[in-house]
Length: 561
Ligand code: ADP
Ligand code: MG
Image (cartoon, rainbow, N blue to C red; front, side):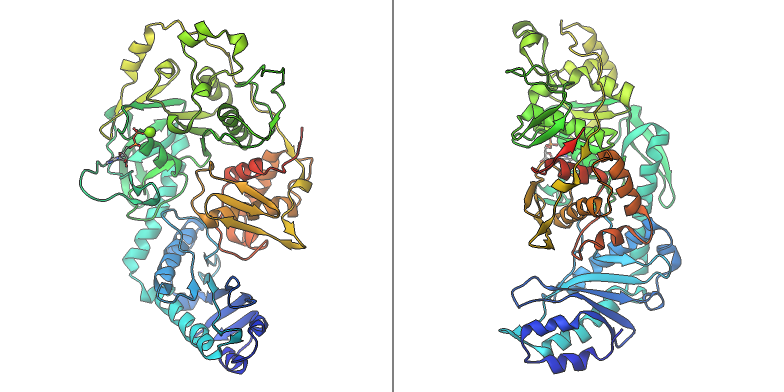
């Protein structure tokens, strides 16, 4: 650790901008902080330098019960990155990734497991006059601004202790609620009083104003769960099996499903979805025409294509709505998903339903598609994969649903009994499949996963929708569970890790490689460290399902079977 950053910056004043690179390394700042310059900045217009600000545990002063488990450390870090971003908002040269409504493991803030120390990672735009170093401004920024930031945002004495404790308790309750689901035979839980609608389609904060209807569970589905901090909490349990959400248009069906879609993440206090949870192996499935598919066995849903193309080993550079959805579903199960969420709004109708009249008009021999309605029960019975489905437009699913929830003016009602009566009247529809046959494991070829461009690793998010991975651009628009751009970066880093650490070696199946990735991301020292070894950037740690989804959308993907 070097000393004298202030005099070093005085010395650099007026020097060519590139000499900033000489700052790389660790510096002791007055007041007990350490500033690590991880990456310099080539010129004033290049991406900002990367720095890590370390606050020793005794200086940060957080009581042990706020950081003595991985969940508590993630929560405390989530609070601190938010505070730090607020504090840094007045300093445009500092860029702190604060995260959004979800509390994810992020590189921007990490709490030390041994001593409760705080590390804040941020981008710092180093000051310059044209192409020369502005040493005085740099000194003000690095030697005064950053210590003040640490003092005001990263030390317990400067913060509202009740607010910090509430943040950690909220996240810990959410985790406890989620881990209670399997024991209760549930795939999701929505607490009474939860606020599900968001401000706008592009703004994930809670909706405001009059007319908001808080969630209230129907009596038939109400369960009580005792949480470590909040005590007993009541709400709607969504059982394992096949659950159908029906109801009129604009009555809140998709809003409920979207809440379940983010229920594998914990939410910040005040979000409205703090006690809306779904199992951690929940994956949203949707249609995505135009996507590529590489050697997936989709014959359960698609067979006898025109021209005689087989579909047990199906590839296409340009899938249709239905084949893309079939492939995504099989891939999700392959990667380990055990709860699938599907919304009619984004599903391919012809993969979902084929009613009696269409069966009468178009013979089975002429229809390659077998709708999901005929295998959704087997998915659960034979493979342990539950489905929650929004379907307001067709009654064919009433026959196969274990539970039917009707949304009416944003209120859920259990209409399972009535649905059984309705379904008892035959429509003449014939089942077109007996069971879901399972998925065929694939073994990705690591040589197709090359992130290097001219000798350097290039992994970058372009918004939430695209991942730049080497020469490749991976379209992630249909992977709806990615929270933000740093989350996309995390997916890219995890893909690189699968290759670098030899988890994908051409012999291991994708699922086995993802198991090894999971071990690495949950092992010591912390989940951020593993991905940080690839590249220092703002990222959030993804789940295996998003990593698999990105891999499957890589146009260069090659697999062995
Ligand atoms: P559906 O899928 O049934 O057609 P949506 O879920 O898309 O309906 O909801 C329609 C509208 O109602 C959206 O603008 C949504 O924000 C709003 N909304 C959903 N739930 C609530 C609620 N609990 N309180 C107030 N508005 C809501
Ligand atoms: Mg809808």
